[in-house]
Length: 249
Ligand code: NAP
Image (cartoon, rainbow, N blue to C red; front, side, top):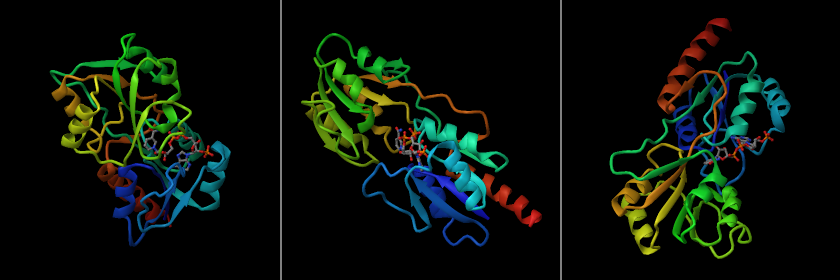
């Protein structure tokens, strides 16, 4: 049974790793190609966009995909919309890790999008830790009075946020390391998407420990359809689909 996993997340990698050598399921992991040297699991992988909904639908058809696992990032809204639109009658599941929630002692400002995040930092100049991804920096140009420290997997185009300090690193990130980094960089405000998950949650605990305010960008909406919170639940769903598929063969 051919299965397409839309990836770019730890959950997708975990699902792929669990399916290595599976007797029935033939998985393919799809990555957008944003990261120059991605860590690939030992299953067939493809890299690059499909060409919109029509391109994805054509791929599903041409490769006789019998189940679609959308394990993309909670903020990868376009590919998730495309997956929902292209799947048709193919069983599809969306892996959606639970969002982070503010804990007692946290100082969070919730905002709907990145321009609102830039505005929410405020009119006083601040030391700001931006962990929003290198594609999302442009709105912060409109708040040039702040001192920015940007952390991203790939270095951003320096012209997007001139003067920013760039830290290139790939998670997971330990709380103690984030605490040290935020202290050393005299961070007063942390801006983050509400990605959820453990791999990058250390910065939130570090922010609380240091009394750093958090500007939290809310998630985009998810199309209708079944969701699971993690890789294990996606694999259980896939077992069920595979059992039905085998009966139909
Ligand atoms: P997006 O805005 O939802 O998608 C933009 C386009 O990129 C899609 O229309 C599709 O192109 C292509 N694409 C996205 N994910 C793909 C995949 N897994 N396989 C093949 N094509 C894909 O996506 P994004 O926010 O740029 O995210 C890109 C990738 O980075 C995803 O794999 C995502 O899981 C990962 N990621 C995103 C974030 C984030 O904050 N957005 C964080 C960590 C990881 P076509 O229309 O041509 O098919």
